[in-house]
Structures are given as C-alpha cells and as structure tokens.
Image (tube, one colour):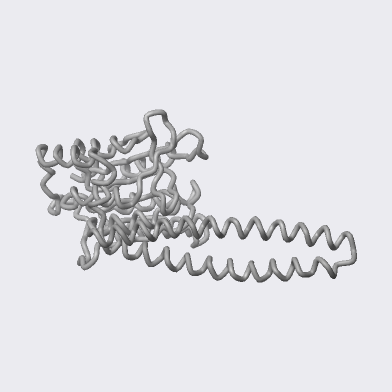
Length: 310
C-alpha cells in the first residue's frame, strides 16, 4: 500500500490557484486506476510549516505532493496562523525529508520556480519533481493528472514523469512550462513497486517525535541540516548572477555618462525632454541593479560563512 500526501496552501493576498480542481482530478484518476486498491490519498489544506511536520509523523507517506505557490530562492509559500503567506526554503525542507529518507520515494513540488527546493530535497529522496519556471493552473493540473494516472497503472516514477510531460504537450502548452525531474545522486533505476515490496518501515514514534521537537527549536537548527553540495551550487549561481549584474551596471553607467554629455548638444525641446526621461529611467534601473548587487552580496557572505561552518 502506497500513501500519497497532498499538501495544499493558497494564502490570502496572493493570486488564488485552482488547487481544489487539481486534487479532485488526482483523486478521480486514482479511483479509476487499475491498481487503485494499492493507493491511499491523504489531503491537508491551508498547510502551515507545523502541519507538514505533523503530517509526516502521522501519515508516513511514500509520495509527498505540494500544490501552491513558489518564489524561487526564497522558498515555497505555505500559510501562517492568520492565513497569510509563510515562506519555507529548500534547506529547511531538505532537512525535514532527510529524516524520512528511508520511506519517501518521491516528492512533487507543483509550484512555480521550485527547482531550487527540488535540488535540495533530491540529496535525500530518490525522485523529486520541481518547476524551473512559472507554471499555470492548466499545466499544473495536466501534469499532475498524467503523473498519477501512470503511477496508478503500475508504471515507475520516471515513466510517470514523462507521461505527465506528454500530457502537457497534448494540451498544447509550450515546453517552457515543463517540470524537471531531479534524482538522488548515485541511485540506480528504481521501480515504484505498487506490490509493496519496496515499502519501508515507518519512522518510530519516539525518533520521529524527537525530530519534531528538534525541528521546532529554531530556524538555525533546521538550516544546519542543509547539504553542502546544494549550498555550493547556490553560492556559484549567486556569484555568476553578481558578475552578470555588475557588467550590466557598468555598461549602464557608461551609457548615462554619454546621455548626460548629450544634454549640451540637444537643440530641440522635444529631444531634450525625451533625453531627460531616458536619463531618469536609466537612473532608476541603475538603482535597481545596485539593490540587487547589495542583496547578492549579503547572500554570498551568508553562504560562505555557512560553508565554512559545515
């Protein structure tokens, strides 16, 4: 018996998603699947970070499916006690799934820009599916339905992933919205065995409860569980972004200097007005570049200090 845990979050103040339709279609597909008796679907709605931990302890799922929003580097969007957005980053999620690595076979992050979190979790879980770009409701639903239809027919995870991507294509959606599959390093081809031969023993109540307490101590404790290879990749990407933005900033400064020098040679009032507008726009863009560089500097400094401490 394989348990699928659906974690859905749609906080107030953020563009609403058709999560109920996505979950309903997944459930309907499993109900009509050839091996439907081998799957149990558990649903948790308006999920807070604490709810994730409790659901993992109580349900012991083999597949965890997140439906909601993603923000890239900052994390996946869950809810707080008031129903507002609460971000959970990839490092914290990786630390949690590390504790359940012997039972969780696959994690699906059906939210925009969730590739970063998928990369982190895949250090511990055999298969993790994330989204490289923003993904619309239609593409998210088509993929989920195709993916679980294939699993319900007894197909392995990699086949189910490809089948979900094929469903997106058949719906006429372009490839830029396709999800990506991350695999645990050095794993062999694993068949998602619906007969139950690959079932893992559940986490003991005592050890799981201790993990629950540890995860709630502080955000710092959770981050310590993060994996060094993921941090190194993130650091490299931040440095590449910094270099790219710095080049654009330098080119923009050069352009601004030329535009300001043209002021004295512009005779037409219309041309002068347009020139001033262009200078204002470029100065705003320059300020934006400087803000991005400052933010990246802080992230690079933080990651470097964390890597030194690992």
